[in-house]
Image 1 (cartoon, rainbow, N blue to C red):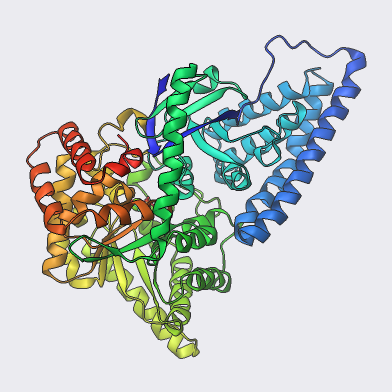
Image 2: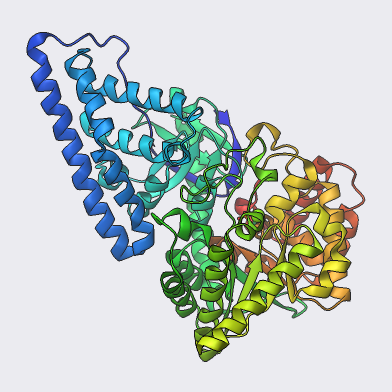
Length: 587
Ligand code: PEP
Ligand code: MG
């Protein structure tokens, strides 16, 4: 049994499918003279197969998800055809007489060590993509296929170091019941994907790839963060029972899809969805979301080979609006930098402290044309939303000072003026501040004078308040949304917004966590935005609670001086309020 960080709740059992490994036989010998030609041919064949995969994937993803999401596979194809890469691998096979698999491994090692030193931002940022391409060729060499082609029977548990972007997309078509990763934490890519699909996941399990092989039976306990490899029969049957209960619970909860979210004292709540693309927008509707509370537009840029122009962006935003007709859609401007970088934005982004550096709106300010383009596209999409009886709201991330907020308002005004001059239709877009920097929380009263709404980005707010990187499993014990100082700051912000009658919502991951939700409701929040998969369970939880009861629980929770005590208290409370949801609770 191994323990990691529970990042998506539930229990799953399945066959391990190990991704992202390049198996190099340590005993592999140099090729004999007579073997070189055959090895080269074997390599070329694997490469051709990988190229065919990429073309097929590109088409499939374009049709099923969107053209922008599919663009990543075109990038991969160009890496695959890159002459420097091809020549090197061939040369190593022919001149150095090393097997193809080892040559690929050598290329990856060389590239990885180089990428930290090179000044070429583009090369550096393509490391993940290069790795993805190499793994794909390598899997054809060893005839272990990519998951979309796997013939492994039954539900799969994907085990990986971290989930590569193309793997995450490809997993869409495979019967994946759980995800376990060595790297990552609550807010890593794998965690967000798992939550958006409602499957249990555990991150930060060091060395798990050395202990599991494809074909093993694995149990993922997303409540406690335990991974059990080849369990004993008694333990397996106990987990099978839990897994059945988890499925039944999910089905049962999904029945409330068309019901409004209300507390047991009839307070209407707004449960919106956090989305990254059109497919998420569609699953949000299926889960009964009231609207879109956070559209993270950086995924549009991350999967696009260059800067998407105004018309392209408009089309994407309109598709999202069409998926939620008559509802409110909050579009966040580009939040790039930190852990997410885009090759075509600046060449000097490498920084010692990227989360505290040139990130988000700070970067947008220095790319005025890009910023204006995005704001105009959002405002133009608002015209369609209004026509359909809904609205588009625009949200600015990482706002730190009043000057910044005034500056974005100025840009929105200029965008509006130009749209009027050009006679282009646009809609009224309320302007929101994403509250995720402690300085903004401290000066909330001043900031409220210049905003139409506030959305609390607790993922970042918690990491900045606790000075603990949200993606680093070693400090995850500190990066906790239920830490007493976090609860104090959140209550102050919510109180200030309510006093000034400025609409306030929370869109960090904690909104969808049962323990945290109760406390947030107790603070007086009525608008929430979360991964679509959590909406049914939070709706059910709300129906078991009055707001007054939640406020009393909050008061009691805030008496505790340590995170562990708050956690324990909330776990007990949850068992009392909604024992049926305990499978969806996690430590
Ligand atoms: C947040 O910081 O809470 C948030 C919702 O945004 P992101 O996770 O994209 O930084
Ligand atoms: Mg954030």
